Length: 279
Image 1 (spheres, rainbow, N blue to C red):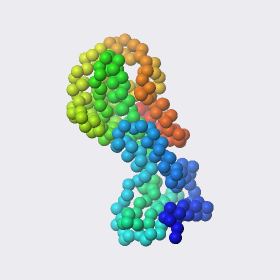
Image 2 (cartoon, rainbow, N blue to C red):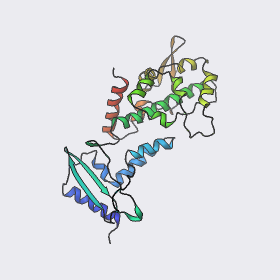
Image 3 (cartoon, helix red, strand yellow):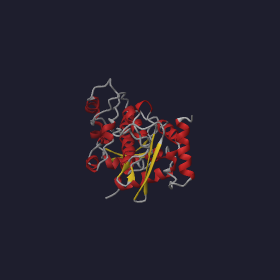
């Protein structure tokens, strides 16, 4: 008797060898379990600090189970291939051992599959990292001023909001207003108002006060996006040079270099220019 893995492997080979459908260079990788495992290793190697962030990246590759409203399937794998406006919907259901629910390989949204290449998913990755950078940037200057206390990162639920209304609101904010957003629950030892208390202590300090009052969009365009470690900041009306010596402060282009998929990188650049530099 062949194992379930061997049945799945035979299904993939037969589908590809018989040319049942054409697969793009990017979509093709999703049919290889080994590739999916490598993708997860890549995302986890980015050393993201919040569990919610890791879950988000995994969901880009593996979609959640859908409730099985039909009768239980047999132990044999089944495949359904449908054509809809020249875009194929492919569903592969695993055998229903121990009452497993059927799990589609792809999730269809409208006439296409919703995946990591969609603009909302890409902007979530960018915005999440950018807001983390803001917090670490301010902490870097607190340390240079001899202050040991640090601001806590913002909750992932706040950082993942990339709809137009929320983005337009962020564009008008100063950096200190980002710090006052809901903090991540991961830091259970700190009170919910930790950042607010620390802000009250440091908001009038030299250099710090000028950084805290920088505009969210201006800071993205002139510091985070420029990928320069020797920067100029307007302090008390004068431009003063600073060096971002802490390599934990990962700038935009440095973040992109952690991705190996050139197509994904090109989409990141395209959507960022549209969102952060468009009229």
